[in-house]
Image 1 (cartoon, rainbow, N blue to C red):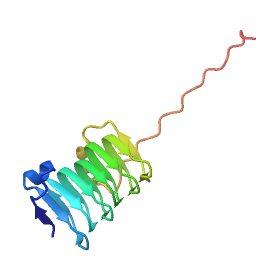
Image 2 (image 1 turned 180 degrees about the vertical axis):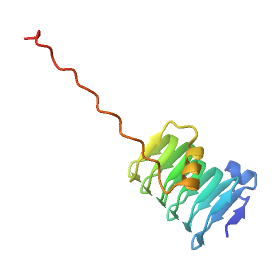
Image 3 (image 1 turned 90 degrees about the horizontal axis):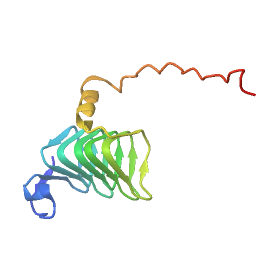
Amino acid sequence: MAKSSAGDSGRAGARDGNLSIVAVGMRVVGELATDGVLKVEGFVEGSIRADREVLVAHGGIIQGDVYTREAIVGGKVVGSIYADERVEVQANSVVQGDIVTARLIVSEGGEVNGRVEMGDPRALERGASVAAGSAGREEQPAPAPREVPQPSEAYP
């Protein structure tokens, strides 16, 4: 249901013929997967896996989780983003969900409403295990409270 194009010579994915576009006015329901770049100008309901990059254009909406190497959000994502390298949230765009990535850029006016976890170079692996096996992240037990040393009687 996505349109492929090799006309934009400015993007690496486009040069290789691996640019897929969900165009304005297009609605896709279901999972999308590509080994290249996916640009969303319309509406996607479902998870997205793009080996290289996911671009959400101004006016584009994704309702589902995103798994990629790099994500640039100029529209709206309602779901979690798992990006191995980088996530950029541009001005006037919204992410309503968690972000797991090595690097994060949020421009002034960009919104992130969720948890942010950074520094994990294996975000895709973590995201894939979450998507494959559980409805959410496994809860880890809370650490035992540390005892606070009390001042000794020797001090005035």
